Image 1 (tube, rainbow, N blue to C red):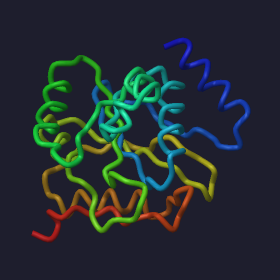
Image 2: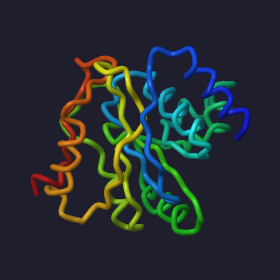
Image 3: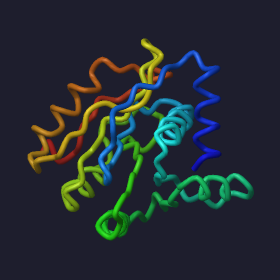
Image 4: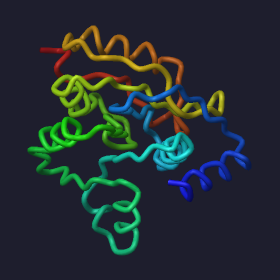
Length: 190
């Protein structure tokens, strides 16, 4: 971790962006939003490396298995997800969290950099199933800040929980604001 922390510190020393972070719980799901650029992943890695935390993140299987790049992605914590058949991923990640003393999962529920009407619900289901708190990871191009804000334990009331999430992200602007989406789950409409 010393090498990764040194890379993060070097980046922060020369960057025009500022890291904003609070202490992380031992087990945590870091929600990354607004997800509008490939830089979002770089910022999240820098923030977690600077905090001295190992983490995993979900990435489409084509990237995780690409020559050279795939090796690097897996080496820094990437977990391949076959997006056309993601069955069992929630259970697999939930098992990892339950069996670990410390576990950080960084996840972008929007699932893509393009606008979409709904977030994917995996982060929600994992957090509720395991009782793991979520941390509000963010990028804000207006303030040139990134990192994470407060911790929140989901209640199982999807509408109420998503209102809290929307309130946190309401004033955050991604690197490419035109690609942003309002945090919303399909389950809110059921």
